[in-house]
Amino acid sequence: MKGKAAVLDAFAAFCRPGWRAGAVAAFFSSGLKCIRPRSAVARENLRMVFPTASEEWIRDTVKKVYVHLAWMVAEYLALLRDPKQALEWCESVEGKNILDELKQSGRGAIILTGHIGNWELLAAWLAQSGYPLTAVVRNPDDPNLSEMITAYRTRMGVASFEKHFVMKEAVRFAKRGGFLGLLPDQAWNATGVHSRFLGHYCYTAGGPAAMAHLAQVSVVPVVSYRIAPFRHKVIISTPVPMAEGLDRNDSIQENTERMNKIIEEMILRAPEQWLWLHRRWK
Image (cartoon, rainbow, N blue to C red; front, side, top):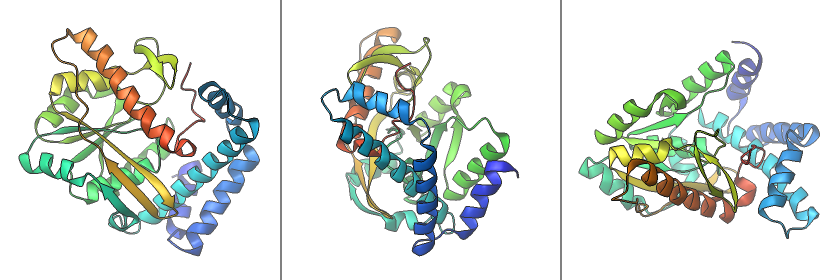
């Protein structure tokens, strides 16, 4: 294992709740604030979505995003020692009965979320809670880093489908009673659905809406927010009504727009916990 993978593996061996996790978070936070990766992108995105916000608020939000990401890494690395800690760290859960009923009935579901809060910890919580979760992911291009992250997810009990090669397998999985984790809040190319996201047009992957159309399972919004380090709140909402009686293309358009609105609501509740560094509006 080389490069970034070796560094993260070393931090994982060191990190655990308490002063060690605090030191790891401080290290990553200081590095992010010093290097300021994609800070111009984040500021541009925030200005576009919040046109009346002050420059001071925008700069402060970018700083909070860096701190959030640093704690996300520290929490996840500390979780590797004992994945069941996710059950303790997600100390408040709303709507758990929704997932329990789906699981008990043997029906599958699409778990709709975004890159909000500590989404990797949320996946671990779902898996450790006994839900049959497989996440649709895009692994890093670095093969060593990709292999390590896959191994970490496996340790958490989270299986994964590679984003670009999963449609048939994912639909079959959901139809058989699996919980399919989708995070459709990242940019897509012109083959996607052209629609508004946080008030501005961009392309969104049509795959999630297509999977919902084909699998005919409930689409359940699930999100977690950090209250404090190692303290999170999970919110599980009632299933999103999917458009019916439309042809395939109209269904994908309409249901993608509905999914976008749900994720918008998640982001606006805690904007400092979303990935503003991403070029969402290409």
